[in-house]
Image (cartoon, rainbow over all chains, first blue to last red; front, side, top):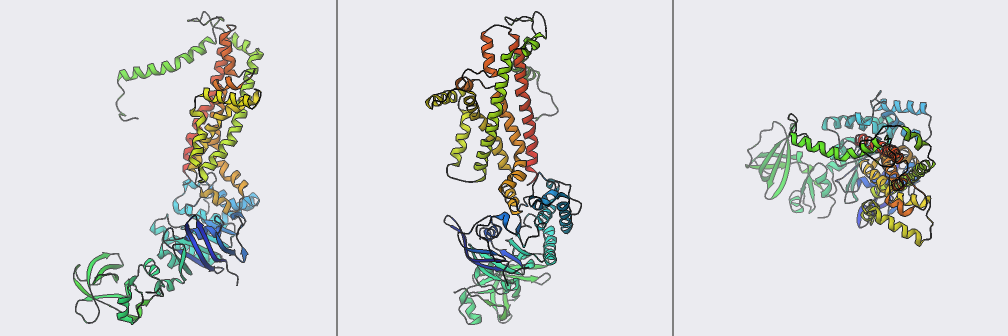
Length: 332
Length: 271
């Protein structure tokens, strides 16, 4: 099957800065694909390469089998939802949504009908006459989504679309985007620096760092089986364990990772385990996050709310199931 | 400015402000009054009598019409030239980063900072060096030097306030460069351009110094007025023309002021 988007050894260098460095990538049609990474990791540049705002310095990009180099943004069957929404302030909502059809020469009645439908799709029916300036952030985001979807793109690119929304709205939009993508069957490529967002929405996640992809996999893969220290630390702040520590429990001299929720905290001198000191506790609502110090090694544990905990500063004994200790590919 | 909303300003300050305003505007009022005087050789106060005959006299003077027509044509063409060049330059400076950008920005603004007499002399010697005879077009070129600045300044300010991703969004939605300019860029900078164009028109219309150096035998309105003051014949005609000039230049400037004031709110609302 042809990939929706395919990168072969794609690089984009700005002078001496390697924003994207020899990236290989295959996104399947109909997939919800997330690009996750800290700012400056190259994920947005990758998105702009797909949209056509940037041209690769080296390598080749194809979209549904067609070579994309040299094809300007307006000839690609790809649409973008911008981080700042980029709505046109001089047009009302309906004309904003109908813009793509207008420049294609679709008649007024027909394009306004299609725009109305797109607005209903994002649950903003009847908002057509308003100006973008009269809408809230969440509503503008929906308009930007409708404006992109009305063109029936083969790939929809979303550049941190939820970044400017407050928590409650963000959670709602996550669910809506997910169900919208399922209903439409369009390939979504989603850029975010929020690992929770990537894990909860995407079919597959690519973790970026320094212009390279560290790991591509399902959210479970990325979360449970990080391949490098960076992925372990960035995705869900896993405990990164040095080779010497790992050797004691697995016999292999490799870097390892242990999820905070896999650590059990017990009273000192209660049998086998890692002796540690409880440094601090952070109440997070459903869970409590503990900072621990095991003979200089800083660890985090997450326990359910209501667990009886020793006082801060007291000695504790840490235990964990050895199956949960994950060995990483990265050489020691 | 209204730090003490409840209290009124001290009397001394009020008088000083009134005197300042009178000093600025009383002479202009005098010019208007003299347009109605019955004394035609010299300006005497108070006017010996009032008449509206000078309006009819002015209407029938062909030299007034010639000067007016020349001034309007020069101002219109310099403004049109400035609109194209100023907008292009502003777009380049605000959209992209390139070597020497700040220098170009400074060089564009320089003609308005330089005394007009320098610009005038420089243009005159350049024209004679290149063997270009003085004509309508040399006046237009002279005026365009400072008209470009006005348009550029207005356009640059607006470009800086409009979000760059709007252009990308337009391209992303299938619009090519021309369609993007027509449907997105132009509507967003239109009021700024209109304001800049009107200011440029007004500046060109009453320009004297650069014009004296770049005009041949033609007379623009301001030059015609200078000549009239030397020859004392039907003097109030000058005052009638002065009133027209005030109207022609003041109205566009007022309009431009209101346009840019509203434009600020429009340009900011999209963010």
